Amino acid sequence: MSIQPRADYREDRGERDSGFEKVKIPFNNLKTNTLKVCKNEQTFAEISNHFDNGSGVGVFHGRARLGCGLQALYSMRQTKTQIDRELQMADHNHAQFNAAMFLAQAGLGRKVVQVKPKHPFFSQGEPADCIYYLQSGRAKLTVISKEGKEATIALLAAGDFVGEESLAGTPGLRLATATAIVPCTALKIERAEMVRVLHQEHTFSDLFLKFLLARGMRMQADLVDQLFNSSEKRLARILLLMAEFGKPDNLDGGKDHPPGSTNHAETLIPKISQEALAEMIGTTRSRVSFFMNRFRKLGFIDYNGGIKVHKSLLNVVLHD
Image (cartoon, rainbow, N blue to C red; front, side, top):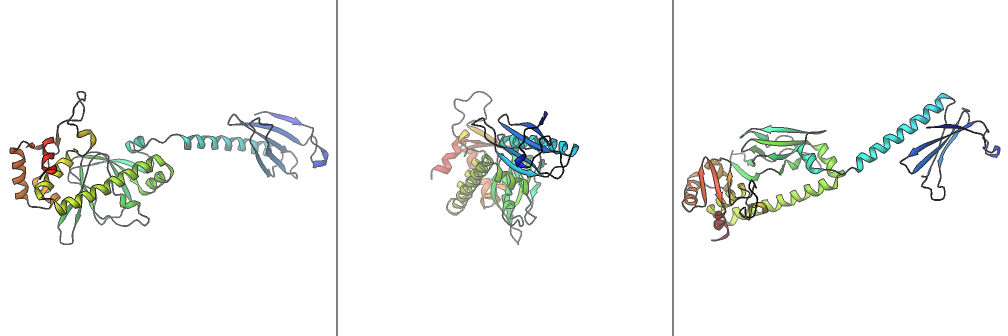
């Protein structure tokens, strides 16, 4: 920043010839701020930019009473500092937002948590003040009646959000309990941070909207399954969903994929008790045991600890 004497101001503007200095501050390589700093405390200093025949000089008009001597110089330096700070903030705001990075790492208003099997992320009736993004593992969403009867309303896998009721206009209480089925890693996002990102980052709000639509369609399909399908079909569907056969990557049976790919004609799902399966489909444990043995004899599944689901189990769901 250079300061040069300026003695060519006109008397008819009430400006003293030797009372001003000219300062030029580069602005974004295109704009130039011309500050006329008055050494006389009783005079207003005018800060102005004007177009110079298409030279790329920005326009800004303002007036400020500046002190004399060192106070004026300090004000000029503060102005340049403010400009630099605004430029840095603009560069930061215009940087492309990475949704995957945001959901993978801890940061302001969010942290990574580990949840053990059979432990809750949150419980029904607790304050809804945050939302979780499941990075790995499996979980279930359940509701409990006043009589103590439990019903599973959703199964959760990596890539799912849970606790979205916390984003309601008036936060209330949790409507369900989210419990880990296997060891889970999740990103806990505070309500204020989630709302901020949804408002400011359209790529993230698009991603979240797609999730909500998919969740709504899934819950509608679950209701239809519960109302119209037999317990045998409901069990087969639950096993396929837990094996993630509903995802496009798992529908091709692993054909034409390199070794090490996650696409296979059979998928191992976490160990789960028959009691838990019975709760999910709304039947008794004895019926689940009967159907599981039947599926194994027909070659649809194998289980010894974990359950290995074969693609052929789709035949139970797709055909009567």
